[in-house]
Image (cartoon, rainbow, N blue to C red; front, top):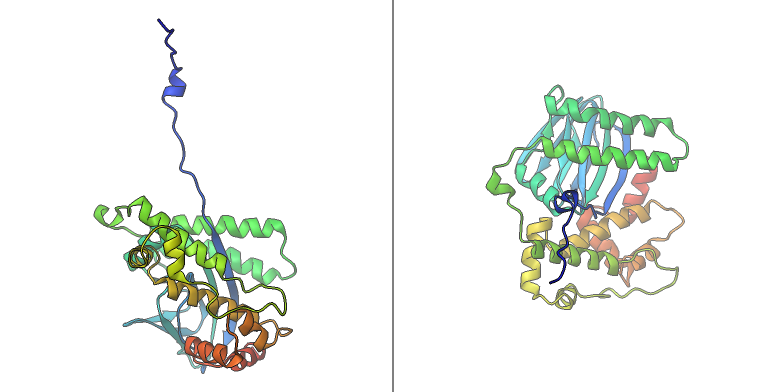
Length: 301
């Protein structure tokens, strides 16, 4: 008779903390002072946008809802939400804005379904979130080059912000029921494949075909039908895969246009447009202005 192996109690009762395997992105953080005529056309982003009004007042329209932001208020705009903003104070306005993203589907869904967008000055949740924004603004105003320690500090603040934001919402248990793990993994795999195939940082002169890859083929390569892939992607990311790719292109276009050493033709090629005219028409659909106008406006600020 074989000897029985008895496990120690501490091995039998082993527990694990959840594994974390997220991609996070923090970008476009800036503060700016604008005059009373300032406005932004209808747009949407692949990540979250947080707007903090420092002075003056702003009106932001998100879908059918209109928000009046006063000094001290901040607004959280989820991914894929179309919105437009304008200054509504005669003396102009000053604001801080930051964009961030995390590929955790549960976080995105909870924030979108909660409908919690406005954090008025003086509210309890506002007071909990404000120190993080103040730290970012203080780092921004310090100027100079940013160290590795600064970047880790930004990332730590970002994770703290995620935790605080989730703590501000209260959804019924049935609303928080997780999607089937397989659906979430398929959606994430589609997103990663789209980001992997979209490469705006190719070597100069390297051609890029406008139809360099097929989203439908990505889904088939994962062993799922395009219809099912579209369904799970919409549930997880709140937009279609094509909208996701379009938002990727728009965000990269804005970054590249702000680099004066790059011609608009080269930028269009990096984004997958064989003709500058095709890129210009698409950019105008995205932002309401041509790439040249956007570049001129940026360098006039």
